[in-house]
Image (cartoon, rainbow, N blue to C red; front, side):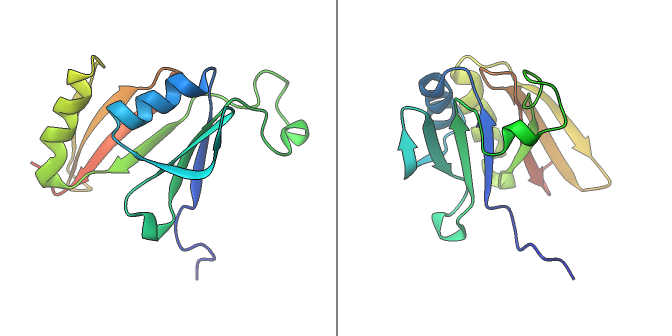
Amino acid sequence: MSFESGISEIVLVVEDVARAARFYREVVDLQPSTYGSGPEWAWFWVGDPKNHQRLAVHKGPLLYEEHSPLPEGKRWGQVHFALNVEPARLSEAVEHVKACGVEVYGPIDFKWMNARSYYFYDPDGNLVEFWSPGAK
């Protein structure tokens, strides 16, 4: 039995909150949330807000950073995460990102998952994936 029931939030540490917020709002097309947003934070809903799954961009530092086993300056870094995109909307989502001037890589077809993925980087070097199960 698993203790978790899903992802609550992903927080990305970024250099420029306004720039990152613009990217996730305009390029990735995430819906902004007023949850804790301000000059050092920007929050977005991932999927239906009723599911309470969020992505945030934050200037840093984060809670308990001083307890990290990694040296200062290396405690947080670029990450990769995937957003689930319905197969019928995958081409539209990819074209939207390209139209915003962002280079998109792929497709990569994962036969073992019966899924197709496209990848692109945010302004802070985080690798974002549009993952679509069942897409052809």
